[in-house]
Amino acid sequence: MTSTTVEIPFWSDAEVAAALRPALAHLEQRRVLAYPTETVYGFGGAIDRDSVDALIRLKGRPKGKPFLLLIAGSEMLEKLDLRLPSYATNLAARHWPGPLTLVLPGGERRVPPALRGPEGGIAVRWTSHRSLQRLILAHGDAITSTSANRPGVPPAMSAREIREQWSAAIARGALRVLDGGTLAPSEPSTVVDCTGRSPRVVRPGAITAAVLRETAPRLIGDA
Image (tube, rainbow, N blue to C red; front, top):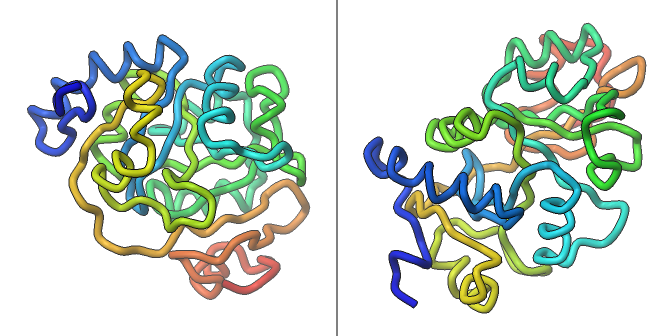
């Protein structure tokens, strides 16, 4: 297998434009893409049941631990039939696109149950990675996302790390890699549960609780 079939360059504007067609074809085949984000490299695909099952098999994800969704516009929230409490709307207005993941209610008619977390919501982030935004917009819908790594191994920061860890999946065509270069170290996204009366920090990350409280004073938890 040649390097051109293993990894698709995904850095310059021209490379991203050329990558869209094969990447979208891979998604249509219900297979998994590896791609750069504003934090780490991720694995993901379309949000239909077969695509989600393919991601679960590749990642070896235990039941009850869902993936988040990446979007590239507020209209995608409406398409997913997700609801934003007023405080979530304020948080999104201030911090999206960016490293803030909101766990939102709704989506019963649109999102597979496997993507629903234990708190009953769907985790969503509007990615600030410009190339990934272009892919999502071309796809026309949200894509799933989980860190591109084996259990117990740090999340991948380069396509090379993915190639080394997942060579068998790449060789059989189950995984295709969008190579966006080596990412700079960064904090993970902050995850906030927005399914209750007040927002609650589920996972500390890039945006601190102090900053979030400037927009949502009733925030529960520290980050």
